Length: 252
Image 1: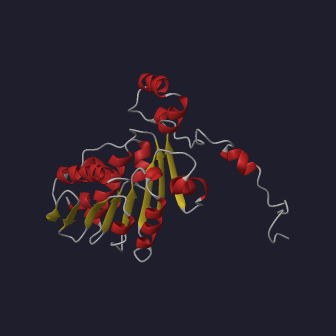
Image 2: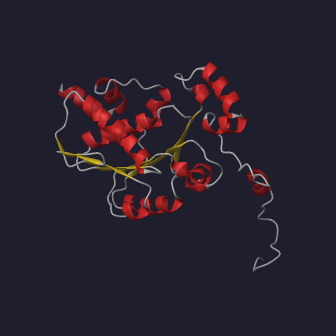
Image 3: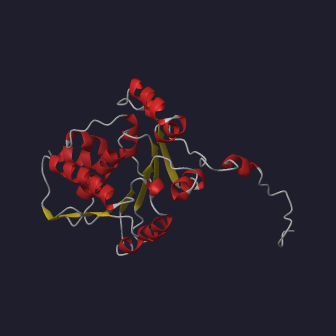
């Protein structure tokens, strides 16, 4: 039993299967075994972003004593839904850890670990420090000020950060990190057509019902120009050149 527990501590995929009864698909295994510091999940609706990251949160809390895991979403309702999945996985554990605190917003384990759910409120988030794992749900819709206020909480702890979402246009911190955040980010993208749990017949229906633009964004993970945008993002980008001398300013 001790050997299995050690193996699960080292492998979150084994933990998901043996302790939680959840069998991840290959892309979910990739996320669960992620060992970096920054992770971007640009994945289709209903792929299982919240389920997979909830398992990450539970694994962190159980096997890393005194950890602080923060769950952030655009609204308290959405944060609470993510927290509900975390609580559900805690209930599945064969050997349930003693909870010193357990309410609709937070839980604290006997080993000192805490999981706290927060709304999209910069003032509230600034009250925390030393986070070991931050999971930002629906990141394309979370306020950029909140994101900037949240990042310093990782400075001392050197904690991990997960941004997960479907796209919401070529704007905001989720798009910027995906497009130009650099090699510090590991990027995972899963289209609905690559998800074994979503049928082709359903996707055909959604494309017809939602229209091509919405379908490409919600299910095919494409960052789209705004509908009322006069010039496309790519056209503007192509028009910029470092070889052209500026008409105004101090360019030389």
